[in-house]
Amino acid sequence: MHVIGLLGGVASGKSLVARELARLGAGLLDADRAGHEVLGTPRVEAAARARWGEAIFDPQGRIDRARLGRIVFAEEGAPDRKYLEELTHPEIARRLKAEAERLATEGYPAAVLDAPLLFEAGWDKLCDTLVFVDAPRPLRLARAQRRGWDENDLAAREGVQMSLDLKRARADVVLDNSQSPEHIRAQVERLWHGLVG
Image 1 (tube, rainbow, N blue to C red):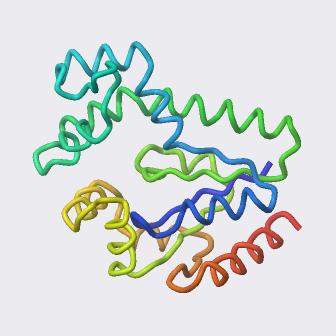
Image 2 (cartoon, one colour):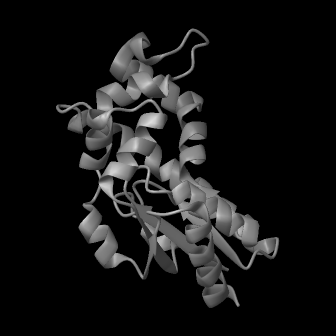
């Protein structure tokens, strides 16, 4: 099974590309979903409670990702972010590998891995092809604002990731997502047929 890893800036349209690839027949390896699940495991909740206290938990006793994000993406949050990554990334990787194996046994010709920290977590090693989804910063900011983020949120999240120039340089394919959904859809279809036939 061919694994396609998606790269790009925050709000570049990686999720749209992943959905289009899934529509064409790819399985979906969703690192964000796996991360949500891992944050809800008793081991991670206990470790997070010991490090950050009750302030990061919601009224139901679950980790509130927005509260935790304000800590780990703060300017001085590097040690906290490193701790969180060391706590969660190995289990996320295990889940992604297991999901890839399941998809392969089910006969999927390809799977797409949508992970913001693909290189930083070492998950690029799971991929056969790396695809960079390109969109100009003003457009990405407008999309991020529709999510409720401001320019500082966008900068903080991108500041902890590999630079866009390096991601673009390491990609096998670059898709332009600066225009209409139909424009990116046509590029994804060409990519799919080129990789899978």
